[in-house]
Image 1 (tube, rainbow, N blue to C red):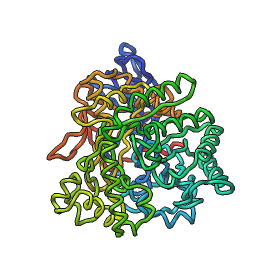
Image 2: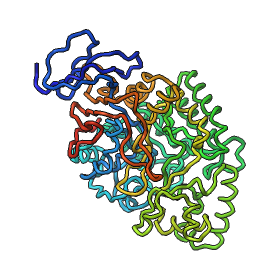
Image 3: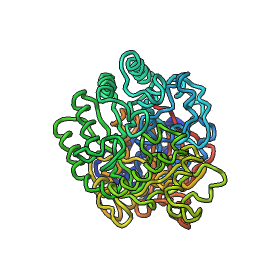
Image 4: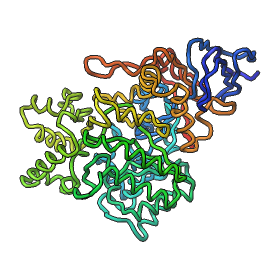
Length: 545
């Protein structure tokens, strides 16, 4: 027997395929799974043994929509990212919502300090790379804490070749973007992502999107899409649009995918604002109909009724385009106040639905975790003026959590419907940051699903949940060596207690500590979490190309 063998014995093996769990053993040789045995079969001797009696043994969880890729190039990224392996995540898929850290052009360097990029990382990056290859090489040299696969972002390509405000791409500019995308695929990118609710992606024409999708399909790469609208009303379509904006946005992408044949992944299928929740049934039916038509389409979601984004996400394009002058114009502020009041009423928002995650400025760290209406009372200002002050003084870099996403704490019917759907894969969509108020999704998404949806509510089986956390996500991005406990696959393994697993506890109104029930985590055969705690200094992740 070769050295560096580890036997995980007497566990309940959930192999990631969706097949029924069984009592058995998993033998690991170096960084790969060598054998899987049923109880009763005698495993060979090994160098080390873990007794997994009473524990589930599963493939490492795959976070298929992460923004932690912006942290990975930093040498100290483990300080902000250890929460990922501590919740069982062994692989992340980055480059989401249209923004990837590569490729970089000289034209783009002047934009790298803007809020678009600081949103994902609260400490600066040096961007010493230019190509996708060099970016992945930089991550490998930083010794990543988890495995990572990376999409190339449509917005990043646009910024590299056209800057921020170019309306539509065509001619040589479009061709340059497409060539850069294909080059990124050749250098290891696992797919293409769109961020159509943000600049500059929101300016792309349907013809431009079709060109990108057609090229991705030719390369056999999937496309993940942050839709142009996530609520009944949005800044991206005329207010007179006959259909709900989020429904229209979904129809457009399904039409493009049907026409081009690209594999389509709808990112974070959420229904933003109370008046948008009623559109969930129609959106799910559109996806199901597309699937029945023969399209390769799925979606992903997180188990929370809130999500993180920039404070400027609440501001319409016309106001953003006029910055910084807009902040100082009486007429612009009056127009904005009227539009936001009307928009909140139509979408179903209140100022209490906006919570500060990271106010960025040192003197404002005491407002992290508070809602805008609470900060307004503290500052003796209106909520509207409070929001504008934070936006202006942080240059739009303040990070917020928006609530009323697909439900609220006492009404999670829509969220439950989305999470239980068999086409739904799981994600954190969380910013991992060094400071501020943490997004609970970064700390406990996968344990929450296993504790709340599987054990408590019995919305779906343990085998179903693990399949959607592992092999389904691996298949989506063609991660051939990950996702199942199968001989020959990489030894990414999580051991958890199905009777106690659950999300991170809340202490004094703030998520604190580690999730419950995650016992041990191995990445590429290396123990990185032991007895629920990340082993400081252990970085066993690999860059997946």
